[in-house]
Length: 256
Ligand SMILES: Nc1ncnc2c1ncn2[C@@H]1O[C@H](COP(=O)(O)OP(=O)(O)O)[C@@H](O)[C@H]1O
Ligand SMILES: Nc1ccn([C@@H]2O[C@H](COP(=O)(O)OP(=O)(O)O)[C@@H](O)[C@H]2O)c(=O)n1
Image 1 (cartoon, rainbow, N blue to C red):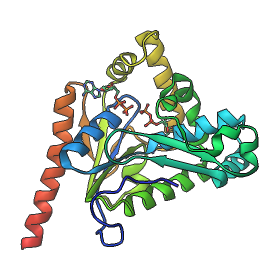
Image 2 (cartoon, rainbow, N blue to C red):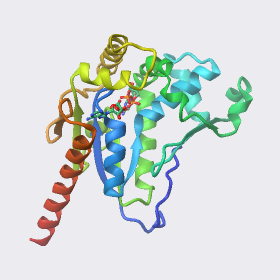
Image 3 (spheres, rainbow, N blue to C red):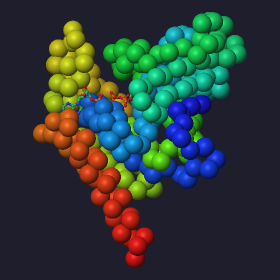
C-alpha cells in the first residue's frame, strides 16, 4: 500500500484531486521539477519511480531474483510501501510473513529514502519494472493513493503516467532534455562517477525501460517541455504555466 500524507480535508468528503501527469527519461528533471511545481501549486506529489526503486531494494535485501515474476508477486503480497505526498520525501517499506524470516528487521517499517537513490539500485530497477504483473500492481496502488489522498491536486510523475496510469489527466506533460544534459545533471549528484560513465549507465537504463513504455515521444495531447536550455527555475515555471493555463481554460468553459 501507499500512504498519503493527508491534507486538511477528510478523505471521504474530498472531491477527486486535479491530476497533473508528468513523464520523461532519467535526469530530465521529473522528480525535482515536479516537486517544486507541486509546492507552488499547493498540490501533492507522487514519485512513482520511488516505488519501483523500493521494490527492487527490498527484493535485493531479501535475496530474491528480480527477474522472477512469481517471486515478485509473492513479495508484493507481503510488502507494505509508504511514501509521503506532501513535504520532504520519506519512503518506508516493511515485509510480513515467511519472506521476512531472512531479514527480521524488515517486519518493522524501514526508512529507505536515501538507499533507493543508490547507483546500484538505478542499475537494477529495470529488472522489476519490466514485469507486467509488477506494473499492474503498482499502477493500481498509485491510482488508489491519488484518489484517497484528500489533496486538492496531485502531480504524479514517472514513465507511463501520461499514457497508462492517468491518460485522462487534464494536464499531461513530457519532460525531456538531451542525453548529455541529463547525464551532466545526474553526474552532479553522483560524486566519484565521470559524466561519461553516468551517460553510459543512463542510456543503458533508458534503453531497457523504453522496451516497456515510450517516454521519449509525447502521446497525442501530451505537451512536450524540453528543458535542455532551461534552468531549473525556468523548467518549474514552464510546468506551472501549463497547469495554470489549463485551469484558466477549464474555468472559462464552465462559465459558458
Ligand atoms: N532544468 C534544469 N536545469 C538544471 N538542473 C536541473 C534541471 N532540471 C533538473 N535539474 C537537476 O538535475 C538533477 C536530476 O533531476 P531529477 O529531477 O532527479 O530528474 P529525474 O527525476 O527526471 O531523473 C537534479 O539534481 C535536479 O536538481
Ligand atoms: N512510472 C514509472 C516510473 C519508474 N519506472 C521505473 O523505475 C525506475 C526509476 O525511476 P525514477 O523515476 O526514480 O528514475 P530517474 O528518472 O529519477 O532516474 C525507472 O528506470 C523505471 O525502470 C517505471 O517503469 N515506470
